[in-house]
Image (cartoon, rainbow, N blue to C red; front, side, top):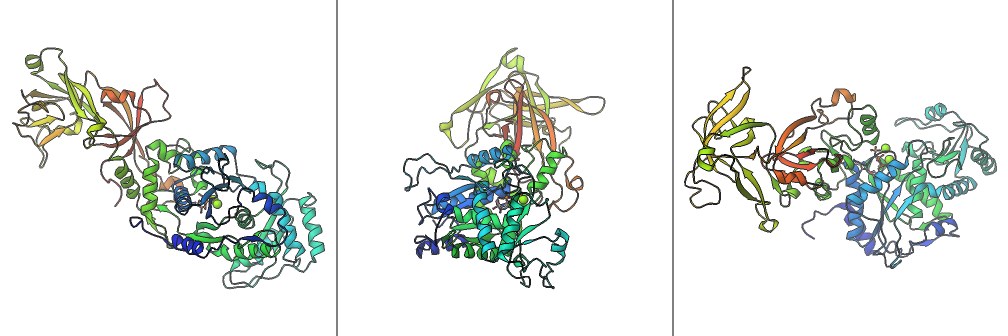
Length: 591
Ligand code: ATP
Ligand code: MG
Ligand code: MG
């Protein structure tokens, strides 16, 4: 596929497949639990990837990149991608987030089913896993390290441990507990597990090298004591594994081949390999074990991609929930009118590299336009309406007469059919389409000028009426006979302006929510939220729309001249029309 730019991950995977790296994967000694966990994965030649969110919030555009990358690579190489909930932290995780994450992955178009897995033909099984189901194995792996003299229980305070870790220039110093025997350590670790020590009184640490130039290798913590009820395991455990210990084990148990993560984890890779090498030597996991690869995280200008900060926006009421259309969550983007196709195109265009940077928000909008323009039905809507009266209508067409006009649903797809609406004596036009005196380069309505009501007739403007405050309240025009669009001779009169409109007689009122960037700051996330927010990120307009839009549901439309809009999915049926603007017609964002 030459259209797709390649990336370093493809090279790694192709090379590994060519060498049959994972085809001969085997267990070291006695597989025990690991073999049990690996049931259903007896297909070692496959590329096996994973997307491992922590269920502590809603997924955002950055996660979409990771989902897209892992699922697309798995598909491309005939492998599978697991959805794994990395739920080893008891405090911040909730079922609501588990459900929202499953929804978001499915909405993006990825399912984790094994329908195409030759190892399990016809079986309805999903590759959805919970790290907390491996707590038992993780505990035994920790005991193995203790027994092998590779881990010890440190009873220094958290401050002492921090203070003796050293820094970039200074090596760490050994804990006074580092010399304990495996037997002592095993007894203390079991005391931790059995609830005999208070929270924070001790941690289990790997015994590696306090002088390592990589601070992550200076005896990192593996387990901590924390009395908290876990959403899956309840009160079974009062000790919980640290992320850095748990994650490699999760990958190994699921027989992941390539563990793809973002660059922040680069410094953790030596520990990832150290741990899995030790566990493979002990026969607890299969060899070769998974390998970690890092790519640059996605950063989008004017957008925050941190679940913690997004939660702050929700909790402090800066937005109306996780699915507020201004939120960069997948739930918010979806409600805003973004489609899976647009997000995937954006991910693909943003590239997979080793060096980070910020991608302009305009790129997100461009991907939306590029995917919607070819397929979105067209409609007219007047967002800032002012009444236009065709003063010779009754005389020419007859009092009360409504003329039927038609337009293509899509200008390049006749098969999508036609739409129809009425033209009458009074129509709504955009306030900005009228000027008392012609500004330079303006070819729409001003006294004496002719324009076409798009898909309708040519009219000649005769004037406008303003109230005492100078606000335009009405525009007047005369219809030019025999100029109806699509009739013979309609083009006899050339006009430079073609304006959108809807008839007062059949237009439907609609609330239109015009969203702007949520953050004024181009690279938000460093200062206080309230200083970085854009105070006018939502402008509500009271519009009139083409009658066909009264029945709009779920689908995106191009409002001619205005951009892409989708009916708000939160609006109850019968409660009035509400449209969210996904993107304007042209790039209006900070260049
Ligand atoms: P957050 O700080 O928002 O909570 P996280 O990385 O802690 O993000 P996880 O739930 O652990 O959130 O993320 C799941 C996966 O998504 C990880 O593999 C992570 O690397 C990836 N991911 C998160 N943010 C981005 C991003 N901006 N670009 C690419 N991948 C990302
Ligand atoms: Mg994380
Ligand atoms: Mg996080």
